Length: 389
Ligand SMILES: *Cc1c(COP(=O)(O)O)cnc(C)c1O
Image 1 (cartoon, rainbow, N blue to C red):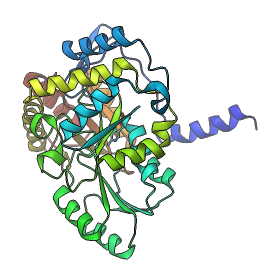
Image 2 (tube, helix red, strand yellow):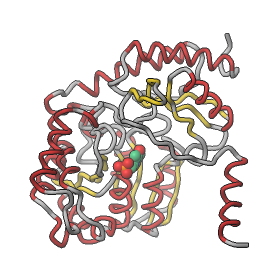
Image 3 (cartoon, protein in one colour):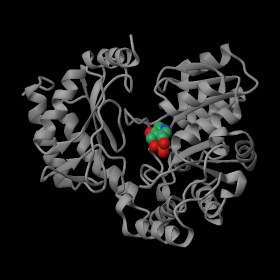
């Protein structure tokens, strides 16, 4: 068998399960996209606040590009650290309410970097943890214990069964496929009681929750109990790049040991500039996140009233459970035919039998857009027997 043949076997196996993935090019970003001369409502974007195309963010990025050039020209520890990076890290630390922050090339790299630098003996991770967290844990060579989603009692049983000198609890503040929120107060209490480190991935709460969108950790005043608050500039901040907010010592550890930080070129000036611009917008328009969450509450309640299963979501991520992979794909296609673009999320991203449509609601969707989406989904859902008429 040559490589083309065995590769085709791998792809074919995914295809028969309705799991083969395809790339699709879009002409623009935003809540409305033009495809084949038609305008579609885009619910598959993480640009929650519309900052990717915000004039101030674009101008800040352009300014950094024109003053510094296209690339940082070296890794951070060589000569790639620009004053711009330090400005950004100071702003991120202040934004998150921590003594320090460290920027990484992406959120994926931030998670891999900090977990490998910490090199824990045991990691206790929520079962729904993002792939970047799992990859970081695997690469750190820690022993991984997964607890049932948001199940603090199950976590406690694992913590008492596996006493650890260098243990880390890994959770997200908002889960990316379910839209629900972690019980951070209880988790912080457990971490303290068992003397382990608590790391929270705030990818989907940064920019949205808390004062000025500082995140859930800030909203709950848990900065002292959450030792590593990871965030990304690629979702609500509309740009690219990841970061951790932490103590000066954890930052120093990452500078010395995080290979995903050390062995890669520093973030381009335009990317750092965009992030600084996004932080300006959050400071100047502090109500953006709250406005979005209010709009989402209305949308979610309308779907629940129709009988859809939207799980435990309380955020801008609104899942509609379908079940079978093919049914989720069919429904996404039917929605697209009606001008509504929504992702069909299938295993392994979500558990088998839990395929779903995942609506990412953004500020660029008006109340009228959301009302129309509810109407269209009601029709499609009835046709597919998901809700009764
Ligand atoms: C998107 C995401 C990441 C990765 O961030 P990127 O900046 O896109 O690499 C990490 N964790 C969670 C929970 C995410 O949703």
